Length: 561
Image 1 (cartoon, rainbow, N blue to C red):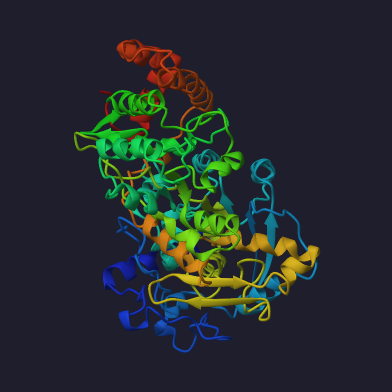
Image 2 (tube, rainbow, N blue to C red):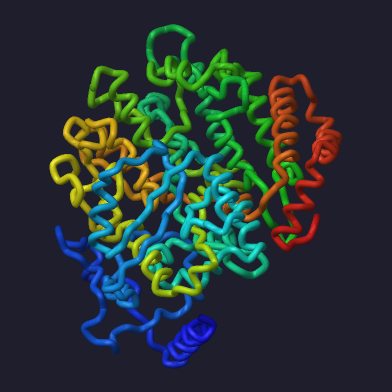
């Protein structure tokens, strides 16, 4: 077995010197194409042994996800000899956590890949415990989509995992989404502990303003702190709903007394909203004045009665009595959800959804801001058990199998939403658009994963590669407008997510969260004076903030301020 491993290493080295590389992406003329129905692009690659070329290591990583994702050329998988059958287990945390004996998705994929796959879906904590037991007993699952980074780090440090950089060349589709920050997220002491997966949910939460109110006020969309306050004042004083009553406000929190919720997006006016690095030193909004200025602005809104009367204590659902009845001038919402809820709240009146328009990032009076909150962290890390290095054929098959389930590769929709058209033609439909988005329609009255309870477990297959980032809707009037708003907000600039690169002490995190919850509202309500801000910063550090900063600085490899 040792000789085999040496041979593999020699083969990779020869490929590096030869400079040969498989084509990783489609040509521009092919980017809008999708695999034809019934086409098996997973060819054996045995037509000519000279065609089987090992992919080169991945050494360059993009700054961001591709603007218009496309499926990779199927020829990149010629490294996989499909004539040999392999058995392996995929473990992840889904939503249903059950299985059925006659799984149609398993059957389809097994026939296509010459495999016998065991698909295991567990609740998050059950997955954590099961992985620990299985690894300690010598019966580790072959691949796990691990939602707990700290568990992956521990397993890697114990020598139980294949280094992610070994597997990544065999997953060219997913490699397109391993950005520089994602690589850093999965890198510990210079080595990748696994392969990070793009998020399931899109970064489509943004501020939305009442376009009709702006027109009534004769205003343009506010871009600065002062312009925003001017609009907020008009929302209360200029009777935008024209009923002669004092029943309109600027915004509310809707956080059930557990934080500022919707209003938190206003933090972005004053700079980065979390832990970050400036000039190779750790920084934090409580240190640089960002948090203070945000709380001052909220205090200004509160003192001038521009927020709904129960802005802090009301919960999200009850707050809809304001937002869906035309009584607030700004919301923080996902675009499609806002349009859909507005449409249904107004008896499906198409005109009602035209009142909302997304905001660009705001800036403070002194020019800070201009970005939204940090983007989403990866949706888990794919980790591979160390023993797979002794059977590279099996490791390649697993990588090949998983990679075709990544967006928008040929099996992405096959395993999504309880089974796409390849599994249930009558219950699902896919349209792939030239801009990289897709329309995935499920007819719930027909699709067996929805009509038959025993098939509900099929939904969990989608957690291999499913994402809503590129999914749009084509129904009029809600889907088209809602998708337009989603894609607009997704495209706005965001602060770098340094938080996903560290592993803070959960005890300290909890303590700081409780400290902030108690004190930040006190400043907004005027129960604490901003004159004592320096004392407050000291209290924050004593409550765990200093240790939090020191740990973050050490993990990010930067110095303390």
